[in-house]
Length: 438
Length: 99
Image 1 (cartoon, each protein chain N blue to C red):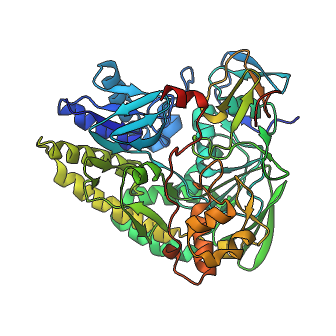
Image 2: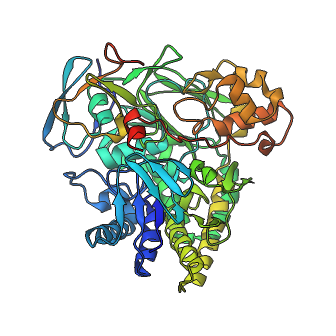
């Protein structure tokens, strides 16, 4: 039987597995999580009591359905499920994972995304987190990151996390959005045309934040006990002991890179994304799905997972049904996503104003000034070799987009001209133990 | 040392006793190592290249900020490892182990 490996058990990976199982195949599913579900539908550990309605709000039905679908496949031995397992390299038709080598004939990558973070002066301090971290802490652990938290950045997750924290009784000090109300109006119209109900729900959630919410903000500095920011030419300081930052999502693309996918600059999301056809084909026997390839969110990821698995089946000569409505839905979600990107843009002005002494790479403590000083190298991989940016613990996941933007601007080039960091195995740090098993 | 995280929900779980830098602490069954430490303390480790402390960043296994040490050797990723009774965790390598 054809060996199909799915990396990631979030909405995309689960629906891909389901589609293959329905066709009588038996995929292998590798996932880093303790329990399948991914990040947005992340499940708390066993023994936690809050129901899905409390954890996922209006999306509880979708979360229940995904979790049940996966649990059913595992219980019925229809998939080989390897939880708490990381793929760190792809080579010669095999995935090298913690726990051993997994040979495959076809590969479906659904690794998801992390927060797209823009460095702010002082962001290297303990107590500064990503917005996703704030949500995971609440959802999967029942904790909040501090007594008074400032949520800052832009995008739907900013409003969602803020509303969830307020509802849970957390001390939210302020919600600081770098997007102007004008941008939000322009993008919001496009969002509403594509998905009126979802857009209205977001607007209601935003309204519920009341005076905690500020638009058109520039984040100036994160200090020990306060966030300093500017809006409409006036300077403010909000006292807090925790900060969560995020500007939408950044696709996890290292494995797609190692698998040989080609990349294209995506102006809407200001990042390099793997190139695929509408079904998710990225090369011979290689399929990509979910936020790791197109940032469409959880609903889009479920569709993309089904489409990628259908493409895989079709390439094996197995006919599938239902692609046309899925593709139509994916196009609608894509229009919605473009509206979101327009409403909550990359904060270029704030990044350009980042002081030279501010830390740009928080793993290796490389400053913005150090990178600006060698921006004449004009290419991120060269700047990495000289400055160590992107060589630290996170391998550039959280600084490389900002670094590339700074390099390009300083070299007088368009943002994509600075290129992207090449994916390198291992894509994450490993214990020696996991290499011995390999 | 003051706790960084505040528990809002799911507080009726079984207590788990562990140590961090030799100090005995109590967490709850189902906590990650990161939650266990930061509901008792304010950081996980020192930064390698700067003066400040570190306390994790992404909580989803991507940023690798929260790798810490154990008394008996192997490091662990605090956000992705469950706390267990008797764990002896360290903010720096045990004597004789490389950083």
